[in-house]
Image 1 (cartoon, rainbow, N blue to C red):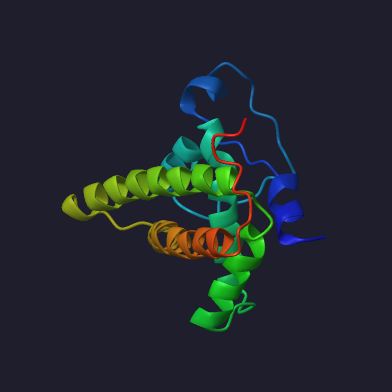
Image 2 (image 1 turned 135 degrees about the vertical axis):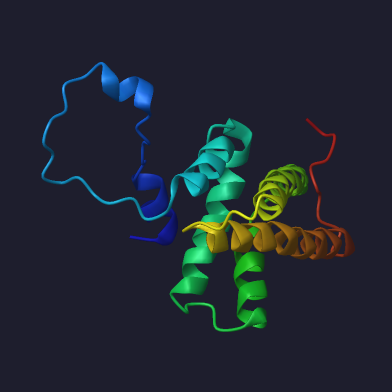
Length: 161
């Protein structure tokens, strides 16, 4: 089972006060402790609830897992992995990813700045920081991929729909 299957196969739901008050609490022997604090899940859910950002965001999270697991040992391995992931896409898809990564970067940046101004640190803050860094790095590689595609004469599928 690959990283993408692992992440896409599981969907976590966050219980809110409003949807738990109406129900009688049931004992769940499989209840797991949250990995991060609520501040993490607020940002995470905001991006995941935006349908067009889900795929780009899941790629960021996949790459972060690979980094945490030391599957990508240095900058060159990271660049190679990003290139491997995105080389299969056509130009129009890469342009869409570029826009989505920029949006994700802005969302994460605003939340990080807000947390910093309020001097809020939480379990999951480092993950959000790393997602933000990846949302800045990946577009640099995507621009290189696009340049390679242009130089090779590949049909980028831009405006040919």
